[in-house]
Amino acid sequence: QVQLVESGGGLVQAGGSLRLSCAASGRTVGSYAMGWFRQAPGKDREFVAAINWSGSTLYYADSVKGRFALSRDNAKNTVYLQMNSLKPEDTAVYYCAVKARGGGDYYSARSYDNWGQGTQVTVSS
Image (cartoon, rainbow, N blue to C red; front, side, top):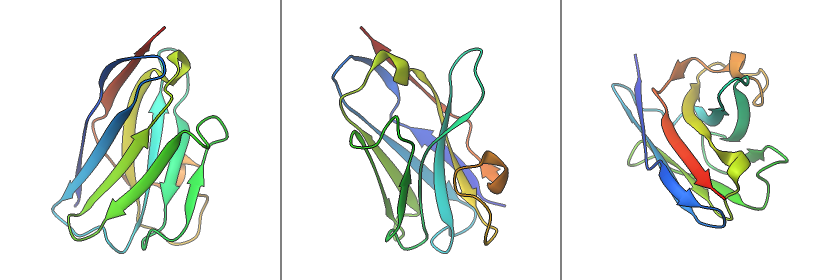
């Protein structure tokens, strides 16, 4: 069983930047795709970004495209989400997850198996 721990969240002003990290333990995740989702109060969990096992293919929600950048360091068993030009509407709890099963939809939370506990990102206007 893999455990995921997100870090790097916090309070930032609009236009600022944060880098989230997702560190995996208990199992190597270098063979699996990884994803980030977020959930704002009163809203459903929504897809943010995903990366395939090698880092060669990236997927982004339209709302973050051009502002967020996802990367991974398989040697460190860690995935990073660089968030730039943050907006108040980016405020949410951000979760990382492992997509251990082949196939499926990178954009759907149902395709992911293991989830972290989340890290809060708050963007003030």
